[in-house]
Image (cartoon, one colour):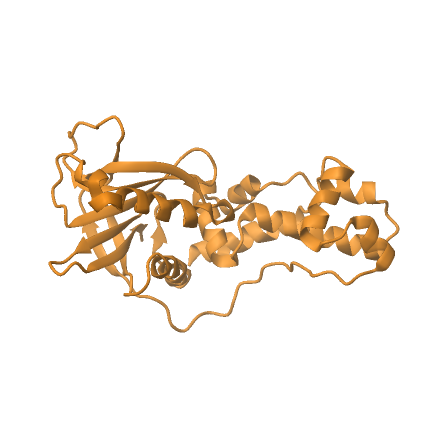
Length: 283
């Protein structure tokens, strides 16, 4: 449950610094998380990225001042960390559908993006299996994607479509595979903020040569919380399971230990596929 208090601490820091040069990276530092991990946790709990939260909260408070004070539009723009009146006006119009000047002149009621509050504890949430796994390696096809604006929900399914096209010719080209009935989708962090690498492939020996068009990911030995994905329409059931598994960690003493989580897909002899999400943990 430690990450709940960290998210609350980061949210409080953002609220206290709406008129200061405070960024989503600063919020991650306040939570004592890497930006990659903080971004995932924050978005899972609030439904928006840390950057979007800051932007929309600043615009909401700027709109409030526009309608309730005589401060100039220029002063308000700079107070809420916009570099120019033009950039502020563009963001304001995108958020509210009218310009700051129109909002002040007409006193049009504007939708508010309110501060995040921790929800009441859920009574029901997923319960995982706990499994110890030795180190292993995955060889396959890799992209860099991001959590920002839900790009990963588009780009990862596109990668799956590409590698599974034409009777899975790309997957069949992976050498040294231990078991072609079991495939993996692996998430690994990069040093580029919310960006991360996603690799689709098979388990191979650690010393397997890497073909030019492929990439290899080495997974460290760890203890995992394993969440079974219910049957349903892919990829929606996976997306729903990702949302629900964070509820478990909200109410558990277990804590996700950084990067290296993966999806495991196992086919049976009848062509059906069982999926599970494996989260490395400590605690």
